[in-house]
Length: 93
Image (cartoon, rainbow, N blue to C red; front, side):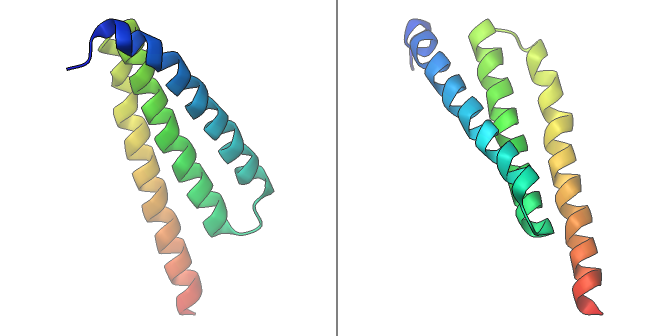
């Protein structure tokens, strides 16, 4: 098991890397030309946000911060289902 001091040293680096990745994904969302590319960037953005929220909860030793992770993960799953159904209807015509 990793000690908490080691975890405190690594968490800020991980949080900054995930934040940079989220900025790149946000740029991709606004510059994408196709719906599939936009949905893929939003999926990656939300997954990174979920991981970032978990890292912040670990950093502050708070389980209450994890409450927002479940609806966020559910939202990205619902987004995938809705867009997949839309694309399926559009391509089947």
